[in-house]
Each structure stands twice: as C-alpha cells, then as structure tokens.
Image 1 (cartoon, rainbow, N blue to C red):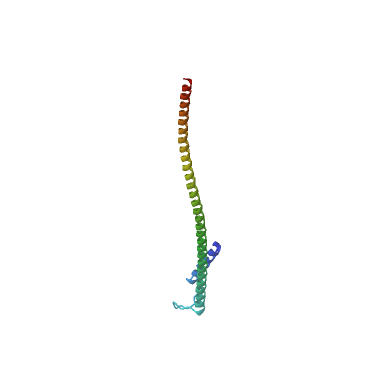
Image 2 (image 1 turned 135 degrees about the horizontal axis):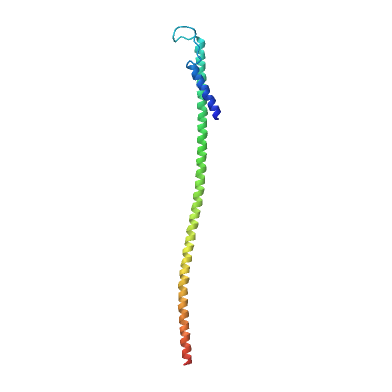
Length: 142
C-alpha cells in the first residue's frame, strides 16, 4: 500500500468519525432529546457501516503488508544463512590449506636443519681428509 493510499484511507476514516460524532449530523426537528427520525438513524448506520468497511480494508491491507514483510524477511534470512554456510565452507578449506602449508614449512625447516647438520659433518670430514693427506705427504717425503 502506497503512502498516498494510506493517507487517503486515514482521511476517509477521519471524515466518517467527524460525521458520526455530529460534525454533519442532522436532527429531526423534534425538541425531544435523544429522538431522531428514521433518515438520521439510517444515515448514521450507513456511516458506521462505511467506517467499519474502511477499517476492515485498512486491517486487511496492513495484514497483507505484514505478511509480505515477514516473507521478505524470511527469504533474506535464508539467503544470509546460505552465504554464511558458503563462507564457513570456504573458511574451513582455507584453514585446511594453511595447516598443510604449516606442515610443509616445518618439514622444510627440518630439512634445512638436517642439511646444515650434514654440512657441518661434511666440513669436518673434509678437514680430516686434508689432515690425513698432509700427514701422508709428510710421511712420503720422509
């Protein structure tokens, strides 16, 4: 329901209430209080019925709008749950990939430490070979 339709209904209800409370009510010409002629009673009854129909119309329209908003809210909530689920899946995949990369890094570091240890052993063996060659060369000269 558009704003202008709502305002038009609101104005109609206001006018009907004014008419019902005596804004435009006609009297029968009788001086007796509380006595109205049949045309006045019928007119009042017609206005009450019109007011009742207008209120029902507004009520039904508002109920429809509320239902539409609830449906839209439910659809939006479902869309958010779907996106959250997708994000959770992507996050889990990324966590698994990060864990694998960490394992590889630890393995590479361990290999690097092993290579460094082997490098030290090779250096020690080279030094020992040099020493043995020098000893063998000095014994050969003697």
